[in-house]
Image 1 (cartoon, helix red, strand yellow):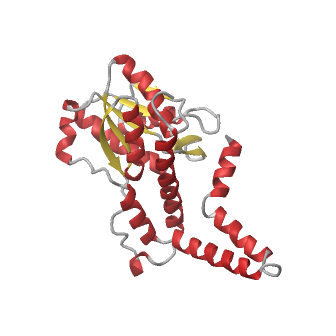
Image 2: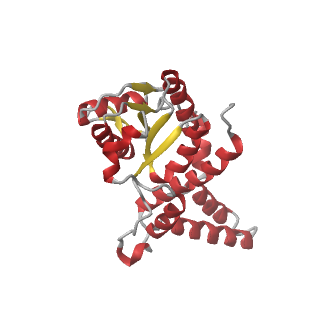
Image 3: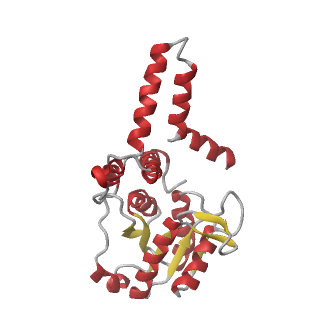
Length: 256
């Protein structure tokens, strides 16, 4: 898992672009044209990846699932038998809590799921595995937060998964053993198409409940053409999602 993390971080911005910039510096005397091309590509890439306007349009391309309407919340039990919340990372050993806590992205999903659970009275499954093999699982952290922060109990904890595909695979083992085939799926809007597809491969009827939309007007000065550190993080996540969505359809099937 550690090597997988290192390779992935080196392959994605900003690390890949910084490495290309380093190559431009090292090659500047021996191969000046190649060095110039590397400099232009890396500099342009860093600029584009740091723009809120890039986030806005990249997210719009990925966020294809419509949000639930408020009036749908109370009728969810007519269309589904459980709410599934996908893990969104953790903050390790937060001194304020003296324990691992859900990330801001995970908390956004949990807050939304809690509202849906209270409105619909549907039972909740949380899905998320270990952080590089270290307990507790994301599922346990999420369940604790739902109970302590939102007064929502979790019926099922799926704590083995490390990927979106495994979220679906292990959720299916737990839910379908109890005859549950219809789920409300909660995750970020840009992550929803791949998540929904994965759950559908295991026979679920999925009602999408996306949250955390990034494709709205960025409302930044200069219309989002000023570089911003937060945009770099968002654009990297969106790039990862776009590649992941393509690879999933090429690599996975429910038989696996």
